[in-house]
Length: 115
Length: 114
Image (cartoon, rainbow over all chains, first blue to last red; front, side, top):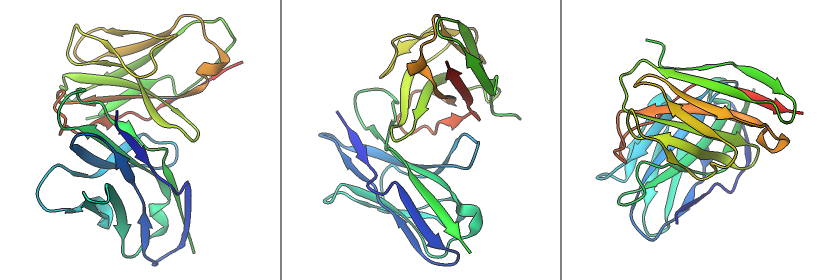
């Protein structure tokens, strides 16, 4: 079975600083990878996803993520964060074959942007 | 275009009471899902419906039932609520069951069972 690890439960950062949110996964078969964002008191929305092709994926709101197969990682980055980026970020995977469209989520990373 | 809507937003139940959480989507999606979100555990799939007329168990189905009423609506029922079911419940939908499909989430229902 697949699993997702987000080692950092909270990441504080000052506005305009860069940020990296880490995600590692474990799977015996190839996976598709997703990052979702949850703003306070809202549902999740897709930031970006890696399906195939270029390992650097660009998403909404200036975020990007890089797929590293050898390290089984899919870290999320933003070069300069804004107060409005304060939210919880979830990494998720789904198997390329088998198991249907069932997302396995990590436990989330709370990004807190401070002035 | 409201996307995915959920009612109610908040609910408090006593142990043993029953209730139904409602979910509707207006994106003409075939597949719908129910998740629960607990602190430090991410989201876990309770049930899903690949298409109208079908439902399947997810990771944590015990204590829940679902009904796919039509293509738009997918409800989650707690027959006899327990404190362990205190959680935030999210409904989601996707165009189909393709693994590349994006899931679209509702705003959630915050349920407390006393």
